[in-house]
View (cartoon, rainbow, N blue to C red):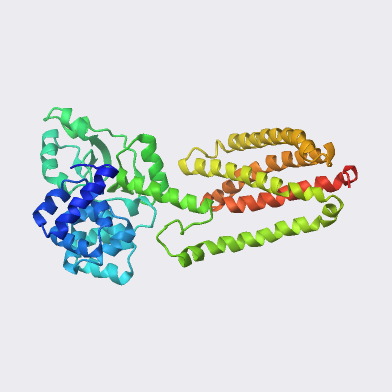
Length: 456
C-alpha cells in the first residue's frame, strides 16, 4: 500500500481517471487498491459525480467502508446519497460501530431510523447503545470492538483467540483483562504476550494498575490522559465494568475538533470556520458576536465623548487613542491565549493559578515599563509641540493599561472556566473591547488631571 507525495498523486490520479473513462475495472482496481486509504479519499474527492458512480460499481461495499469512515462528515453525507440504498447499508454494516454512531448522530432522525432498521440487528443494537451517551464524552467516542480475556487464561489460549478475534477488533495492541463480573482488572500489551512463555497465565503477565476513564469523562480529559501516558488506547468503564475503549485515531479527531472550536471561540467566528459554507451561513453565525461587540464599541465611543472637553483643550491627545487601544487589546489577547491553552492541556489548575497570575501581572508591568520608556524617548521627537508632559502622560497611561490588560486577559477565562463554561468564549474581540474601554479611561483620566501642564 503506497503513500504518494503531491506530485505523484496528481499523476496517479490522472491514471486512475483514465481507467474510469475507459471502463477498465481491472486496471482501476489494480491502481486504486495499491494506494493508501488517504490517497484513495483524495482521488474520490477529486473526480466528478459521474465518475464516482462508476467507482461505486468497481468497489465493493466492504472495501468502500474503509474509505468512507475516513471521509469528512459533509462528504459522507454527499457520497452516501449517491449510492444505492442496499449499497449504503452494506457499507455501514462493514464499518466500526463508533464510526457508524458518529455518522448517524449527525443525520436527521428519520434517516437515522431508516439506516438502523435495515442494519444487522446485533450491529444496530451496538450503535444504538453508543448513541445514548452524551456528546463529547468518552462514551460517545469509544468503540465496543475490543479484545478482552480472563486472568486465568494462558498466553497460548489468548494468542490463539487473537487469530480469530483480531480482524473484528479496533486494535489489539492492548488486551484488557476482566473478571467474571466483567470488571476491568488488568491490561496486557501485545508485546508482552509475544515474549511471554506460552504456558504462563495472563494474571502473571498483566499490569493490574490500569488507567481508565468513565463513560461520562469529557473527551478533552481523555485526550489529556492519552497524551500524558502515551497510550494508543484507553479503556472506558461504567461502575468498574469494561464497556469500551477509546483509540488514538479517535483522539486525534477530538484534538482537531477541540482546536477548531477553541480557535473559533477566541476569534469570535465559531461555527463559520468551514470554508465550504455559504456567505449567508457564515454571516448568520458571526453576526451575534459582531452585534454584541458593536454595542460594546458604543461604550468605547461614550468614554471618548465623556472626555470631549479634554480633547478640545488638547487636540493632540486624539493622536494616541489608537496606540492605547491597540496595545491594551493586544496584551490582553496574548494573556488570554496563554491561559486558554493552559486550561485546554491541563497545565493550569488550582495549585498553579496564583503563580500563573503573578507571572502574567509581572509580564504586564515589564511590557508597560518598556513601552513607557520607549514613548518617553520617541514622543518628544515626533511631537515636539507636546513636550515631555505629553510623553509622560502617554507613557504612564500605557504602563498602567498594559499592567491591567494582562490581568484582565488572564482572569476572565479563569472566571468563565469556574462557571463551567468553555473558557475560549472569552474571545479575543471581547477581551480587546473591554481593555480598550479601560485603557481609554486610564488615558483620559490622567490627561484630564494633568491638563494644565499640557501646551494648548
